[in-house]
Length: 238
Image (tube, rainbow, N blue to C red; front, side, top):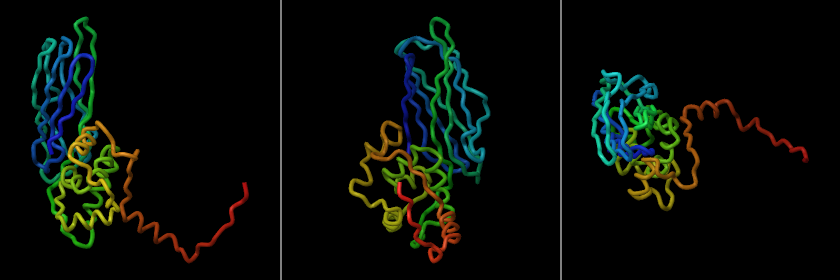
């Protein structure tokens, strides 16, 4: 899925296009279009890759030097190409920063974040349950960012494909929908609402944050709690 987000301040608008998920070993291409609202001098674009797990994403240059004036109404296009390691999966946000100066010489910086998943493409074909490694992948990615939970709730089957690189057959999709208790009227949302949630323009209605718990932890809790030993305890009156 190609995502394009727009970021605006008083001096320019940036459109940032990038894929939601790639495979290990593939290039990550980020396309930038910068349009000046007011004339300014663009200095450089920098990035912080510390938010990507497993140090999966790399680039040979320290920053993208621009060092040019951008007149009001004019645009500038650039493409950044990052590398990823073969066999090394990861996920997270890349923080991007554009350094610039105004016509009166004030030095400023403008930042935004973009999400990327790097996972090997797999097929979910276990008719009994989602494999443990894919469950962990789901829990980790959903819990890593609040917006991911909203995207998951909006269309969980598409989330598997577009953010986890997991192909889900129609048969498995039915099982997942039932298991995850997501068989509700109005789900999945339509394409327009889904893309608006993906790009942060809106949220999944009625939800602040979703946090998933990996089943293994639930099993440990079940082992430590025996309902046969439970008893009712009267509450003290207030």
